[in-house]
Length: 206
Image (cartoon, rainbow, N blue to C red; front, side):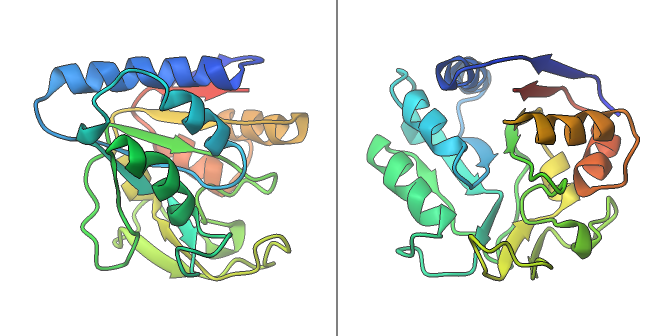
């Protein structure tokens, strides 16, 4: 398990500054595209809005959703549709997550986490494995979250771990407790399995 850096009481602007610095370093290190994966839910989008105000060459950025609800992209529950509305006007490419896609190595994997310890759409009932041979899965959460009662498509643990660094943004004391227990190896939730397999730097903003 990698050591995790915890940054307390971070604002959306603080996180956007950190992301802009990491992306700037990645752009400077290569002449090719920089590829990241980002989460859905309500937390990331205000941070992304702040991030896109930074002066970076967004045309070199490729954005993968870490997961999505299986709905049309113009549906309000579509992560991909929301990401397109933000990133594409800035010049970045947003990938549609399908099981046919070849998943790249990510410069950064940005993750959220549910209070039940799920990451991406790898809920506890899906029993995610560090040695999962597939890179993308279609799956059904059980129970289905009432705010998003849809089947899902998700990157797997090996796909998320194929990254240079991992970022978590964890809001709320209940989630923080779950994350701390996972980091200490005191649970077998999906987030704990990912952290157990992480060899790269992990940063968590709270």
